[in-house]
Image (tube, rainbow, N blue to C red; front, side):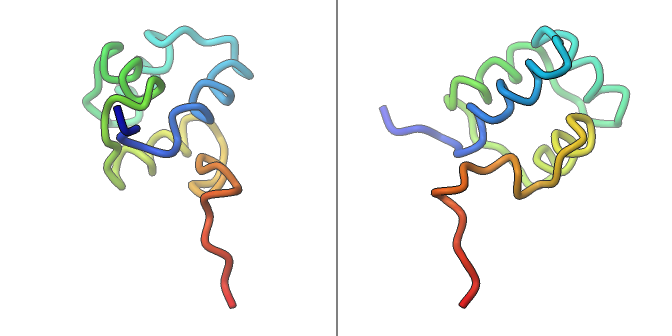
Length: 80
């Protein structure tokens, strides 16, 4: 099955730096204004769910990283 997003593995990594469970991350995202469940966080991390630009914005803000840091470096398009 083809992955539905590029950021899942980095969400896991950055969540781990806070020692948060998937439920903890979902709660922080909800407090930041994003309606999301623990199941959706799990699906994003497993790359079974697509991620919207709004979700990327909230994930980056809650995880205290830039939006670009959520993406694997090998997947980023380098400016000319």
